[in-house]
Each structure stands twice: as structure tokens, then as C-alpha cells.
Length: 283
Image 1 (cartoon, rainbow, N blue to C red):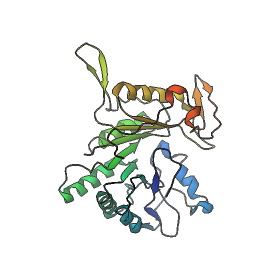
Image 2: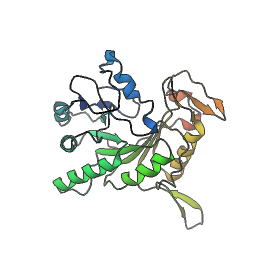
Image 3: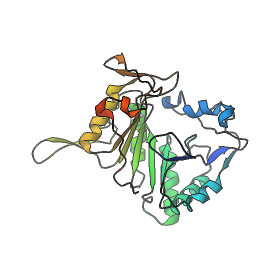
Image 4: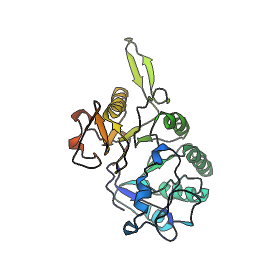
């Protein structure tokens, strides 16, 4: 379905609760004020009012939505399962394989898969690749992990880097603190022939940045976003500044925006008005 998420065209929520709505399970600090859980509390939007905790309810896979991918002619970017984690522990492995099969036969579409559980993503994708005799995912399947602070970056990124794929991406949202991506293994400092220190990145093809939104949003200091943008600029890595968040600060002072999410690019500081996509993206 269409979406207001600025870095994609469509959201395809292929996993849902049988009686309606969605379900997920919180796993780290970034999940505390989960937008999906909040939306799921509202029956007007099709939610079931269940919390994202405890044991999973009965779930179903929308195989018809997967089948239709192969018949879509106009290229689109699909954010798959925006309301849950398709690589959650509760998701059957054969569902994940069926999803990848559907993507494989739809080469004109771009599929963006985001997880907070890259260890399961790695294992499941490797199983799928082995079953198809492939050494890496097709270029139209992008895989990413969410990193909200240094702890999750240090834990999740090394696992993501093991997945054989053309496009890997990081969603730094909600950004809860400054992140050192050299420490996390993304960037390296190298000495070039003219003895200038260069920042090099060969493993992550795209960064998405954003502060937290919603009435209980935690602060996002614009300096944290600037730090990542500067690292991406120096290493020539595409970066997409999605939003400043509802509780943005600059120089220790609240940075107020008319947009409640701080998501209008014209309200960003000029040097942060950047919305790039991976260089390998096909139209």
C-alpha cells in the first residue's frame, strides 16, 4: 500500500495477525516508543489493540501479495513488513524463504528489508542462497538493520556485513545518541599517497537518519545527525536524512519545526537537506 515513509514507495505488510492487525516483539531501546505498536492500538487503522510483547498470536502470511510482486510492471521501492520484523524469532523460516522467492521473480522491483535481528536474517538468507545455488542476493533485494545507539551498532553491524548482497543499509532511527561508525566497523581511516587521512567505506551502501517522533519522543541532537552526514560525505556514502524528530535539539536548544515529526526537508538546516539513494539503484 502507499505510504508517507519518504525513503520508499510502498509498504507491503505480508505478515499480520489472523484476526486483523499486526504483532511484533520489542528487542532494544529503539523499540520503546514503537510507532507500529501505537498504530496497532487504534482499531480505526485496522489494529487489534494487542501489545508488542508476550507470546505471539496466530499469524498469517499474505501469499497473494507476494505472488503479485512478479506481475507488477512499474518499478517501485517496497518496504517489506513495516509493521513487524520479518526475521523475528516467531516467523517460520519457510515464510522467509517464500518471501525471498517472490522477490527473486520480481527483478524490476526493489525490496527493502529492515530487521533488528540480523543474526536470523543472515542464517535464513544463507539457507535460501544455498538452496538456489547463489553466492549473493539479487541486486533488487536490499537488506538493512536498525541501529539506534553505539551498543546496537557494535552488535548488529558486524553481522549485517556477513550477508552477501549488493546493497546493505543502516536505519539510524530513532537516533538516540552519537554513533562512532569507525568503532562499529563501517568506516576505516586510511593514509593515501599524499599522506591525507581518508575515510573509507566499502560495505554499507546507504544510511537513513532520523530522530524519534511522537508525544513521548526522546531527544535527538542535530549534532548527532551532522556527525553521521559528515562521515558519509567524507566516505562518499549515500545518506538520506528522513527527519529531525519531534524533540530535536541544536546547540543545546530546542530546534522547533512546524512539522510534528521534523520531517519537512525545507525545515532542516540547509547542510542537512540531503536525501540520497544507493548508487546501484535501478530505475
